[in-house]
Image (cartoon, rainbow, N blue to C red; front, side, top):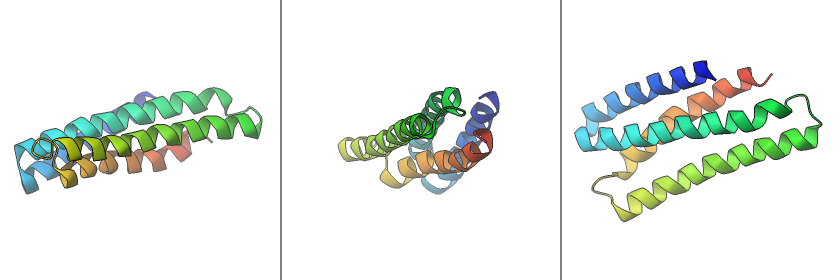
Length: 114
């Protein structure tokens, strides 16, 4: 999990830097906040799946589905934050921070759960 956390923090910094160059400091803060949320969600999803990698498929699938549910809650968090306070959480920057971190980590997860 340490490698996932490190990769997530590096991705968060990279995405926040790009967002800063495009939209400015407030957008970069929003991207960093939701990038950090993406790292936390990914670590939580991995913690759910790791103990049942060798378990029967139904248990594995249930835990994997719970991890996907956490990710969906993150997407709903974007909508909620950008809908309630678009000045502090610009929609594109917020979604870019979350998805720009979560999607590469999700692809990286496939290697970790083999």
